[in-house]
Image 1 (cartoon, rainbow, N blue to C red):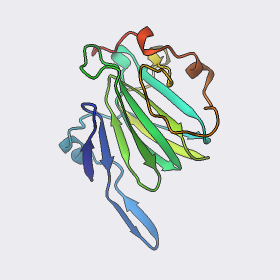
Image 2: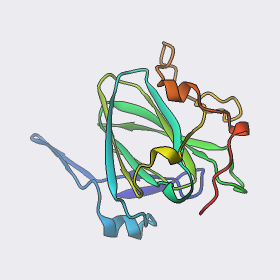
Image 3: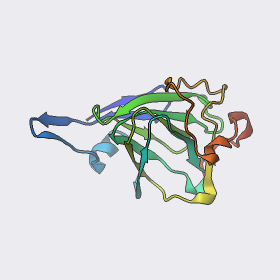
Image 4: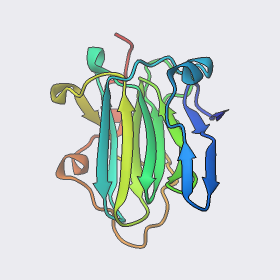
Length: 184
């Protein structure tokens, strides 16, 4: 696998080796030793999966305090524009974001450490999205941030139609209204 740094410290793009032939492909999705050698030391304890239609935006989300989560995300079917936003208190890159295209075809993964909000825009119908988390989901600790906050200046792709958001995501606050994340 190849591991590429991004413009934000600790956020990484992982490009696993994919072995393709006339039968299909084989790919090692996760290997603790290889990821630790690449500097990803998260101990993943929960796997999640979502199915979404084209035009859905999920996020931007994180969990607060002792329930913070690092995530390793990938697309199994379809395509997303995946975004991480630095919300760490006193970080020199606070409020900055990095994004990448994740598709079933490219097989790339995105590692989002604790202290970053995460979200994605779905680019194809029936997109299947998977993520590993290093902490369990705790609803009372979930926080959100407006995906379209002008201060974030995220270059979301033009999906030709208004985004489809959950009611919860429609009510997310702006960056100026949140309490920045701090390591517990």
